[in-house]
Length: 123
Image (cartoon, rainbow, N blue to C red; front, side, top):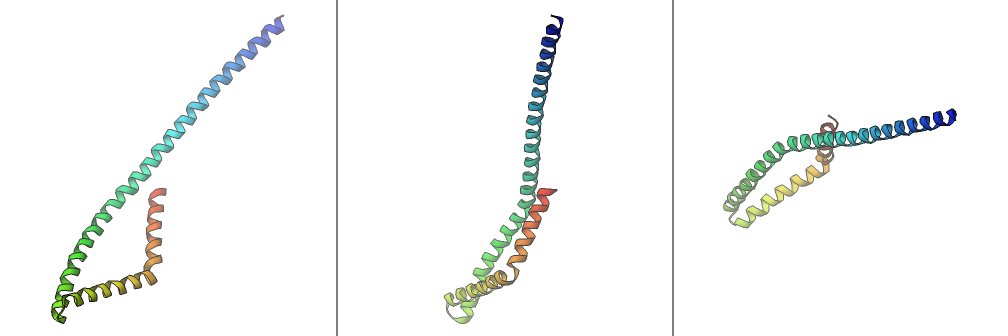
């Protein structure tokens, strides 16, 4: 009878120990998930905040080029004699620049941007 008492008491201790261990494991898992979420949020916010200033600068440069193109088109059209010829010349200039960028610089730009994003995410 004493053996049965020790066996039951031992089983209860193991059950309580297992339940305690299981609860700690669940809490550890929840804490790790929360930590991963916070680290991901930190990386994403860092990446977005570092991309906003260049986007603003590129937007301003885009507006500058937009109005410069109109002025150049009007000016060239006035020199040539027809306004639409000026627009054709400016469009041809942008087409040539786009072809050159696509053929020679496209891969470099892509590599620079992807390296920057990876560096920011792994920081």
